[in-house]
Image (cartoon, rainbow, N blue to C red):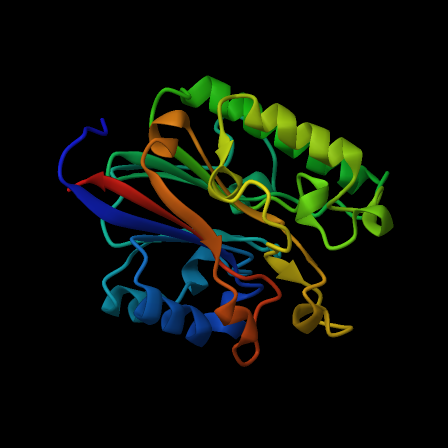
Length: 269
């Protein structure tokens, strides 16, 4: 339980790295520079046995990874070992879910790292699977957790929730990652008892994007979308000091097309 005691800063980052094999040096650099207590990764694109454990352990991080034969894969790197952990949707058969959802209890807080399917093209079976995945994530939260406990849901949601979260809402209306059905499904997920940490601290600030296309000079022109998120339950919201997008790694050599999202909490020491 979070109590009003002497506070410490506790930083959580989430980052779709678009292949850890291609971006290992960038992730190690990020950990050395930023030193988050927890870093959630998406799109590692690795089987569990292929995860390069030693370089991250050398920096003092414990590793949980949920990978497989697909191009998915999520991981949680933490300075403290996990007290408990879960992988996928327990009791449900879905060959992709074990590569897309990882939950770990760290420092008394449940951290759920998720990589929601892209779902393209709109109207396809894969689009319907994306919607189904979001609704099953809501059911998983209902069955396993409570909005009264400290919980953090983070990762690549592949949905920009509001018009302020895309560079041109008229142009992108009805397109993948900004379709009304996706946004409505995300609201159902939030209604369980989750708060968008970035908008809690920066409710009306435009241009806060976490993904930019590699082409068309999108990053330089800031023609992006806010697809990566950190959502929290009320107990954590009360301890949230800030949430922001760390754009610097998007400008590094051979970057991911995503930038990390960071939440900083003031927690009891």
